[in-house]
Structure formats: structure tokens, C-alpha cells
Amino acid sequence: MGVNPDKVLSDVRPEWAFWFSDSFIARNIYEIAKEIEKLDEEGFKYHVNKNKKDISNWIRYVLEDKWLADRLDHITDKEKYLNTINKRIRHLEKKQIVVNELVYFSKQLQKKIGENLHVFLSLVFILLVLTLSITVYFTYKSSQEIDVLSMELKDLNNKNMLYQDYILKLLYRNTQLLEQQPQGESFVSNITEQIINVTSKIKFYESFAPADYLPQEKIHVYGNSIVLDVKDAQWSKFTSTGSMIPVFDENANAVQVLPKSPDDISIGDIIAFMQDREIIIHRVVDTGTDEQGVYYITKGDNNILADTEKVRFEQIEGKVIAVIY
Image (cartoon, rainbow, N blue to C red; front, side, top):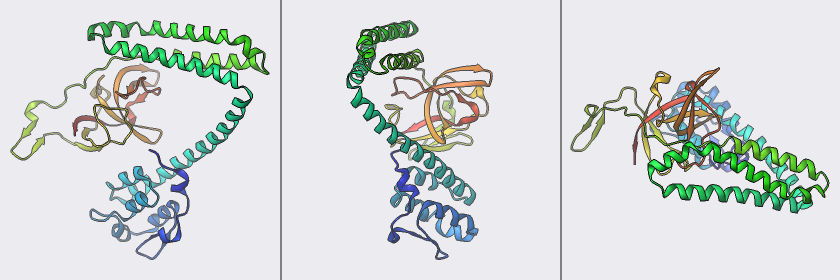
């Protein structure tokens, strides 16, 4: 989303503070949430209604948190409005901690790289070889007939094992050089284990079209309008992630419905689900059952690999049935 947690969570300059109708002046998002909680319904409606979006506009243009502002634009209920802000605050606080840890890790990594430059170059070479191998494979795949492609996809698990063997051979060639350095042997062992863990989890999936949902008799086309006869339909807007290109990008709109049971979700369907306090919209590429029940494997059409986390039915916010460009 590209938002700066420090900017959203810190005080703004005095001239950019938000003035509430009761003359309270909010300098940050914490004070915004605190004042909304104290406002009565009339005071809240003064700033948030169908015609006024005072608070979300302030968040969009002053705090520069477009993600939060876009969601608040469609909420007029005070409790839901406040809950959305508080969830965003907790998410950004966690993100702020992660950013600080990454900065510290980056400094430590730079120090290690300076001390073991030849080790770093060897690792870069290995990663480049792996990247080149995957790139060559997908270039070749795109030029084949669909039936040939289907047969090759079934054999990819064996190819993944070959990738692992190839990487281990490259690591072995550099072992003697690395072992001459302090802690070289343990460094090789750790890197080898990490690469094996990553490559062993690679799995490729075939792509399927969504299951038919809306019959022709429920699509009514008139001279100047189109009516979709869909019960409990919801409007959906996409964020700019690029993971579902070319099916849709941030400028497209969609119609979605809330599935009532796991049977309403099929391989090929595009679903919106909650993950790490964010809404993700990806395609279902596989399903299965484990000790927790039914789960779904999802993947962005523009992503090389499937998502790593299983999606449960309880996480699903909607199923896309139409995309409008």
C-alpha cells in the first residue's frame, strides 16, 4: 500500500490539524479516534454523511493514508467507522515495529557483507542461476500448446527436486572457499538448509476459469442500462497490487456476493478474503481438507507462485461474479 506508518501515527503540523464541530483539535489519528468515540450521533453525522467526508478526506490528504480513506468513504455507521480506524492503527503499529527491525537487520547485514563479500557474491550467483532457470522454463512454457503444457505441469514436482540438487552442487563447489573463513562451515549449512526449505515448497498450479454463477435470464440489457438480477450483491474496488493483471487492476470495479457455504467456492473462482488485517483478491487454484476442515489455495494470476497460507471459509469476504472495466 506504500503508506508511511510514522507519518500516519505521528502529530501533524499545527496548521494541518483537524477541527471538530465541538472545537476539539486533533493533531494525530489517535486523537481522531478518541474524539469520534466521545461524539454523539449528531456530532458524528456533522462530519460523516453521504455528502460530507471530512475525516476521510483529512486522512487521505494530510496523513496520506489512501487505503484507510477509501474504506471510510463507504461507512456512515459510527461504531463501524471507529472500529475501522482502530484496526488500521493496530496494523500500522505492528508494521512500524517490523520496519524498525528491518532497518536494524539491514545495517547488520551490510556489516556482514563487508566482512564476507566473497560469500555474498557466491550466494548472489546461486540465486541468479535459480532465477534464470525459472525464467527459461516459463519462456519455454508459454510457446507450447495447451495440451503439452498440461502434461509438463504434472511433472514439475520432479523438476523441483532437480533444482534442489543443482543448487546443492553449486554450494558444494564453494564450500572449500567458505570454510576458510570464520564460521564458514556453519554459514554454508544455514544457507543450504534455507534454500532447500524454499525450493521444496514450490508448487505450480493449472489455471481454471470461474464457475458459471449468473444464468442468461438474470442479465437484462436495456437501451441505456444493464441490470444484473443478483440477490445481496456488493460493489467491490481493487487496490493497486498488480497481482491479478491482466484480469483486472486498480481502475476496474466488480460485483461480488457472499458465499453461504464452502460448496459455493470452486477452483477457478476469484475470491476476496481477509489475511493479516488486509483484503486480498486472488483466484482459487486448489482445495483440500485437513484437521481444521476445508481450505483453499489461492494465487494471483500475475504471480509466479501460489500464496503460502491456506484460506479458510471464515476468511472469505466475497466471491467476484462480474468485473467492470
